[in-house]
Length: 134
Image (cartoon, rainbow, N blue to C red; front, top):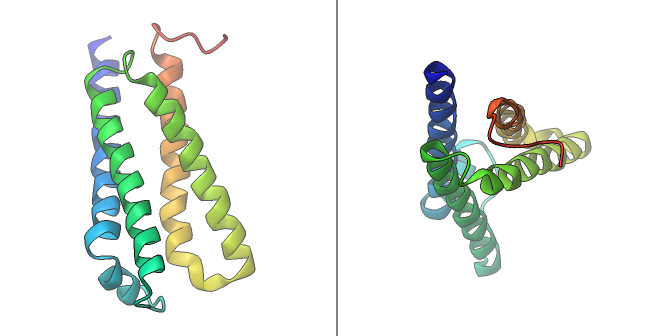
């Protein structure tokens, strides 16, 4: 039983690091990132605000995953929201990949989100204190 709890804790710690890393990059270094992956840059303030807002949201979810690593029962709602967001990111990036291949780097990151969503589902399902059949 302890091994399962440790695996769940590690899963959410990895998810926290993943989200905080990407979120912080969007907040503080998105111009470097976008230049690195070949995306067009702009100095429009509206664009920068939206990218930074996205980074803030991603980072916030990362903090939520850290909390879930400490107490999954208490913070399971954050995990449910995170699963929905991660599936949504994958669907959104898949749609845009279908329209334009230049979004491939974001699609690959979104694919990681889909994997995390699946792992989150199994973590919730295997946590006996959470009833998924409500």
